Image 1 (cartoon, helix red, strand yellow):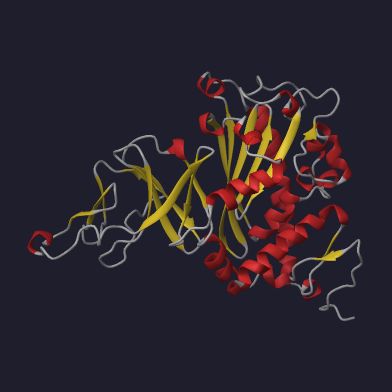
Image 2 (cartoon, rainbow, N blue to C red):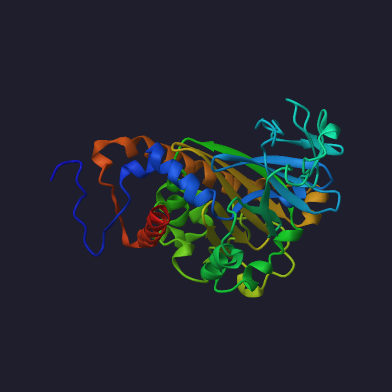
Length: 376
């Protein structure tokens, strides 16, 4: 067997994707087209845009998208492309406009509803349909307190793809509704610039074979993780806090009051959910940790992580640092591991891929899903 061939596997060891799936620009371009530009993509926290004219631009696949608050109080999304000559309408990552969006190149101006409302000499051109030449609209749904957008002309079922991922993991939707994510407030947001392919991050989040090795703080709080089985391995399962652990904090000390609505059987438990292609949700009794990935290149992924608490915890200025620090350490440990894997993906020794241990076999289903999407 040469070093570029796939290693032998058994029923205990199943193969991974080959290394080129993490390095090939062509594969990454196909993922942008067939995943990120066709699926529902979690773009922004709705509460980040509280007032009319507030906006944020988000990179989704190969497109820049504006998500903004309209005068009617609703959120809308548009491609960030002027209909005149294609300049970026909003060059900044975020901001507020008073009445309209205006392209800085030729001053074509669009209302908060996307309609073309003004341009130099436009009054002399009565044949121009201002709605037809408005900004390109992008489909938008709000759920769990976030704006999810889809670039496809005919979006897939939100209930099947997004809500279905939660139902598949927890067994129902009621379990996540009890945490009241819509009404929670961001207590801390940390953005990580990870020098690794987005799939390495997904695979890492899905398994806990590595937990005993690189997450000492986490396995102190959730001792069952030291056995290598992630919570996502079982439908409806939540990892139980260890004996003497009172909260999801760095030292296991008590955190905050249990969120209103969280059931007694959810108390002292941690649940992890993957919503493909780019969201991780982590549920603990007193807060929620919400990851959004923005894949920018085959070897670069920006991850924005929100720690969500009850509005009372945030507005009263209570110290959230101990609970933030626990998962911040987990994030740094995970992303460091992914960055150490990324260079090896280009090695001839990994051209045929690696293998998955029994506790990681569910990652194989993720790989099958990915390949089916790319072949579609």
